[in-house]
Length: 399
Ligand SMILES: *Cc1c(COP(=O)(O)O)cnc(C)c1O
Image (cartoon, rainbow, N blue to C red; front, side, top):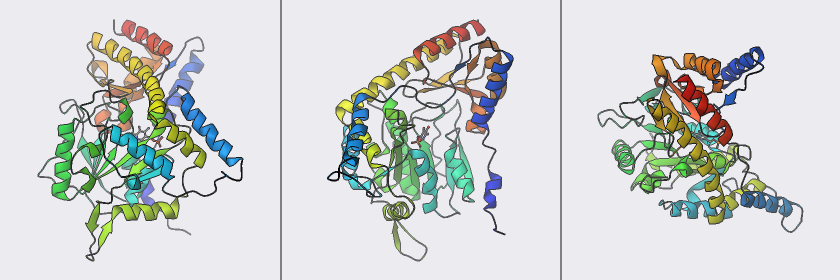
């Protein structure tokens, strides 16, 4: 009989989205005449831009001819895409060597897999609330997590405590679910802390393309010194609508080198390269030709048009909450609006209330951590029409 990885017993039941689906289905069955509007899922809805589609078509055509056919590609991704991403980052104020960029099938895999490079006895800081993958992947590896409390007092942007040591710090900015974005000076404080403690920041910038204020950093490498203390994860999922197409990238600078217990220097770049070359055989060539089209200036303009559409939805949601005196966060540099449940309700209680009284579906904050217990997330990824209708219902509900 195999001995199992019993750390899996320590995972919380992954019931958030299945529980939402279950409650919505039960409601719809009991109320077949009511139209339910879903502003809960963190998934895009607009189709890909024409240039991304052309890039995908080009990749397919190459596969049809012997001269351009591609078999296995480099595990790290094709040079043409790594160069295109490096140029894109440079336009966003971050100088990143194309060699430090690893192409993948998305940021979820990479943010989960990265924990393999680190031993079990590190002090690991993870924000609460946040994207649940960081916590769960560490628990699967038998690791202990320390939570960094995000709350209304710190605007859901927890800052380092110089007197408390950490080895690994996960940061997500713009944050899922709160929409909060670290400023340049705040990230600088994190980088200084990491350098002083010889810690590594694992920075998830999946929503960087939603940042409209040029003063806000879109990459941790916009901060001096970050290449000596940070790994960055990004994805085309929210930037370019690639949630179903699948493409992401992870930046592991060659500067990230640490001394092992036997005195040997170990490079995180070399370790990640070895890990990927061993366990991953590269992202589909066709997807990479589509992705390269996204990172051209024209391709990114098309992505920005879709992002503007979602941001207008976010503005409508935020406007309604503001008008009703409900305290909210995010909604500007993010597709998410995060607000305190009215009347001191718990998030699942509010979920049922909103479904029953307004037929609007959101995401209970409890699904993102203990500190989300009294908060609620609405997303801007719906259609304009549905968002407007949902806001009319909220206005009536909150009189
Ligand atoms: C959506 C999302 C991702 C992207 O995951 P993919 O696997 O690339 O689709 C990564 N991080 C956060 C915080 C997200 O919300």
